[in-house]
Image (cartoon, rainbow, N blue to C red; front, top):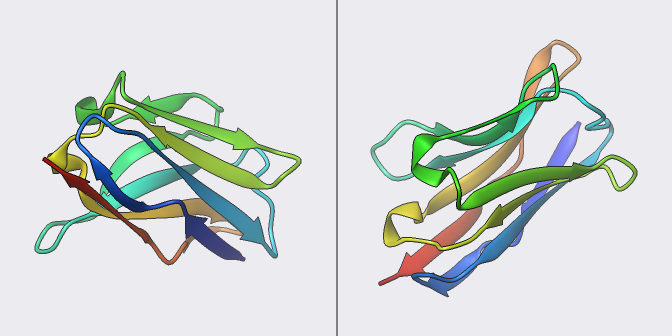
Amino acid sequence: VQLQASGGGLVQAGGSLRLSCSASGGTFGYRAAGWYRQTPGKQRELVAGFRADRTTNYADSVKGRFTISRDIRANTMYLQMNSLKPEDTAVYYCKIFHLGRDWWGQGTQVTVSS
């Protein structure tokens, strides 16, 4: 399974970005999957995710601003990020649980300027 994350970039505070994660060699379907982020010196943290029961969960810091979604037919997962803040600056990774293990995308940089 290969995941390709894209959509990162530089944006001013208050702006929006939409990240995409496309899968090949496997399907998102309704599997557990999510978006994570990591900054230097810190552990990777969950930003938003789909549980196996198809419910969603969000980090408290992004609730009301970020929305996770997926297009089953396009085999793509998205993260709509609105009202971005400088503290959202990080490398964002997508992940899917498939065939008994986690698969990670390569990461896409999001930089929010103040």
